[in-house]
Length: 580
Image (cartoon, rainbow, N blue to C red; front, side):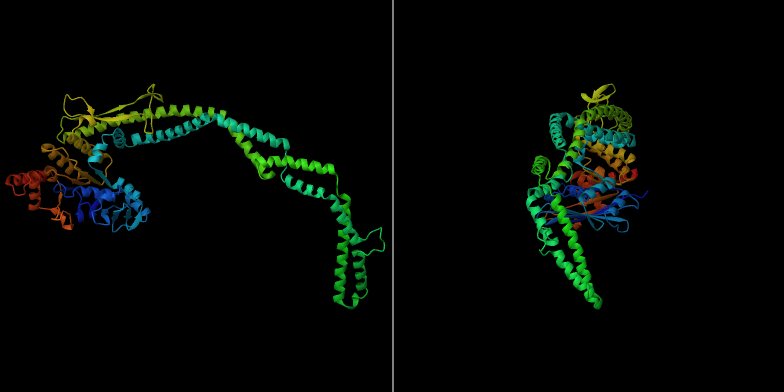
């Protein structure tokens, strides 16, 4: 099976490292060196490549920024390749190039396959490519939430499927509960709003405005208010066009135009142009007659009744009272009324809605209880297998009598959901509190690892957990920083042996100070400072043959040339080779 491999990292201006290249390979790689030489910067660098937090304090003093570049070979079709290509990244002959830059001012940039990408994308890729474990991860394992997550991860679909259903029901229940709280806590405000709406709707209904009525009444009021002037003007205009019966000798426009038309009609046959003008004057005569007739009708129909004017003004006053409260014009008032009716129906329906939501809430709580029970059952079954597997791993890590177990418990809560016939507290991940217990030797009562495990025991428990995960949910690369803290002697040898076994199915990189662990590595890298206190390109080198023996001797006795230490180092290497 082809897997992803972290091939190389180049680190510049990061901590004590000036410019160094870390060459990695498949299998087990141990990174060693004097205390303070910069071994941990290897872990820090990988953390940056995988989207970790950018700390400007990491930038080497005097440098503008720190840069970490990495090469990861990724098989075709891997989810990491798909995500990278979706982001526009390009692979270089099956190799994914990752770069992270951190400035001294705290700005951070990420590049993937030659394309600038959000740092968050690197963190997404990390989930599929590398598992990083250090001292902070050991402390994280002490948290109950992390222990539950570890158990759920081990259980796989047996927990993931009911947990997804539970999560959906839980979110729906929270939404309904929030809506119920809003309805009940805002009941007074909603009642006041409903009363105001009813008052407004009653006031509008009493007036019964029609669309455009305000515009029509304004025009009618203007006309009625100037009725006498309008009638006088219409009569005068009619007389000018059609003549005044009381003045038969008067000259009017209709008579003059008729005379002009007769004059031209007499000679129009002699000239086409003059005939055309005669036709146009005839049209004018017809138009004058029509206008004169309409003026006569207008004057006769004009209503100058002061009672009608008073009625119009009274109606306009009623409409104005509405527009002052509910809109700029009658159209806006009618729109307000439509919206008010809809809102009132909504408010009046709250009682019905309250009943519906309460019923749905109760049904969801019952459903949630059933799903929570299914989660508890699945976790209980997985916990037995997980604990047995971790216990077996501890036996190979020089803890042959240690026993690991899980306690899965619930907390009673009158406001909780009913599980197993009693109300218990619940949350987004169910009702279970999961705690990892350790009995380090026969006769010792199981105690929470936060209280009952020493530093060395905690390191081995974490390694055992990760090894168990490697068999069920493998990750291509594992990076352990000081996983052997607090461990020595035979336990250190067993850790080295177990890491070598893990490296048969994954790439394993270990930052260690123990020669018993380093001896089992397929490759050993030495990080060393120059005289000025920095790590340069030549400061990270692969140890082979005599160089490796000397480094293991230094790690054993602090002296590279001690014959006793050299003999012990060679014995460790021989033991490791025999195990392979």
